[in-house]
Each structure stands twice: as C-alpha cells, then as structure tokens.
Image (cartoon, rainbow, N blue to C red; front, side):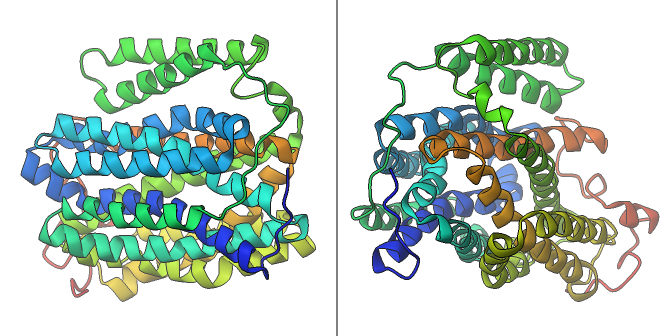
Length: 446
C-alpha cells in the first residue's frame, strides 16, 4: 500500500529523514570499523584474520539475514521491523564498545549484523512504498546523497574518536539510534497484504552456512580446515538455490529473476560493491600502516567521496527518471573504475593532493552517477508489494559482494590470515616498485 507522499510535503521530508538517519547509522558504523582496525589490532593483539572478521562477521550476518529482514518487513510491517532493527543495533553497539577480546568483539559485531539485517532493507522499502512514483527515484537519489553526510562524517568523526579510544566510536551509535526512533514515530506503516504467513526455514539455514563456509575458506586459506569449509560453503550454496527454486515460500522468489532488468542490475551491484568495499578496506589500512597517517587523517581522506555524492546524487536520480538510467549507470561505472585505478598507483608515502584526492573525487563522481539509478531501477523492476524482499535481495547482493571482496582480496594479493599489519605487506604496487625508500617516489607531505 502506497501513501504517495511527495518530497515537497513535510511528511515526505520526515520520511526521507527517517530512512537517511537509520541507514546512516549502519553506514557510519561501517566506516568507523574500517578506520578503527589498526587500533583494534594493536589493543587486542589481533592478527589479520581477526581484523578481517571484525568486518566480515558483521557483513556475514547482515548479508545472510537481510533477505529475512526484508521478508519480515513485507509481512509484519516495514516500519515495525525497521524499529526493531534500530533498537537491536544500539544494544549490540554497547557490546562492541565493551568487548575485552577480539573473539568477543567479533561476536558482538555479528549481533550488530543481525540487527542491521532488520533495519537496512526497511529503509529503501519505506521510501519505495511511501512516495509517489514520480518522486521515488529522486527520493532515492536524495537518500543516497544525504547519506554522504553520514559517510563523510563517519571517517572524520570516527578517525577523531578512534584517535582517542576506538571504543568511543561505537558508543556514538546510541544517540543516533534514539534520534531514529523519534523520527520513526510519524512514518507511515506499509506491508504486503498478500504475503504468506509461512517462512523459508531451509533458506534461513542454508544462506548463512553457504556464506560462512566460503568466507571462512577465503579468510583462512591455506590454513587447516579451509578446503573443508569451502566444500561446505559450495554445497550449501547449491542447496540454497535448489531450495529457492522448489520451496513454497522462498526468501528469494525465483519469479523476481524472471525480470531481466532485476537480474542484470543485481549482477552489476555485485561487481560495483565488491570493488568499492575492497578498495575502502585496503585504503583505510594502507594509509595508516604503510603511509603512516593517523586514523583522523586516513578517515578524512575519503570525505570528498561523500561531499560529491551529497551534492550530485539526487540530481542524477532525477536525471535517470527523466532520461533513463542506462547512461548514468554505464558512465558512472567507468568513472568509478578510473578513480580506483588512480588510487592503485599511489606511492609508499603519498601526497594527498597528488595521489589520493584525484582518485577519491572520481569515486565520488562515479558513485553519484551510479548508485541512485542502480537502486531505483532494481526496485522499479518489481511490484510495490514486493519492495521489501526486492530491497533485501539487492542489499544482500551488495553486502555479499563486500564480504567476499574483503575475504578474497588479501589472499589474491599474497596476504594470509596470520599476517600482521606489516608495513611492507600493505604497500601498493607503485610503492613496491619504489623500493620503500623514505618518501617513496615522491614527497611524503600530506
């Protein structure tokens, strides 16, 4: 049921603010976690595998349960499930902030991921179900751009707080969660009146087993147990596909993939978010470990991405509504790739203006062109009544992409799970060619 709100209405702007603040809570935590990794490793004496699981434990829970979150929203009410996720995320953040060991920290991050799986799909589903069709793409663009505030604030605020104590960075989630609940009070409720009352138990069990097995194998490879984990993950993945094709109440209804647009956009999402998550993970660690920057400096380095998105993402959402989504998506992907290529050429001691800023600016332009049309198109490809599960599928794809990228990329570049944050091991190709000499190939000033 759509209430057909408009962006010019006070109720529409409040709904947008609710969705942005709720999603911003999750985005903020992700950026803070990346910036905090070196300090967490030092304080808790964690090896690379442990640091990977600080990110992957959270992402694994989110990716494997986000379909359940979207389905619950369709059945029980998107506003209600969104609220449950917000409360759970705040409580789990407390456990992260007080964790005394890397093992307990990872466990608390998993609980955060479970709560985020309830919160995340509801954000876009609320917008899709609540706004008039003429305003949906623009609302999603505004949602994308305004999240730039949280994403821009995350590295700076997180870097500053991590410089004091990384635990404080997770306490910040509590007042933000309280603000989300206050904004949520007047949001319209929506649900799928035709949603079945039964749940896909097989899918609920097989999805996390498949993702956990594959992720564990990539993270631990070539350690003991990695091959067995890979086999378990692949077998569970195949079983999940079979269960979705033949189950009576699948989490990922096969009929949605009958839409060529829905299928293609989700494949594009997989590659885009794998590249983005992997690059952000490496950039945050590289700038602190190899370049020797402080957490605040490393966090601030990515702010231009968010600033560009804040001003341009909504405009590109409106452009896609008027002229079609294909051109901004294709051009945006090419610009994003160019930005990543520039960052890959950074030397051992980068100069921010010469070696980092051009790459992150291109990232910002590329994402501004790409994200709103990408998200709006995938939601528009299904009926409004299935917006929750469609949002869940698209979010699951993006989170799974990040999960697998962070697990696989260290292995692909020669880092194993028992490596520490060695300065030599984290150099870029350009830095290694420069031989690690002081100043690298250019000035170290930043």
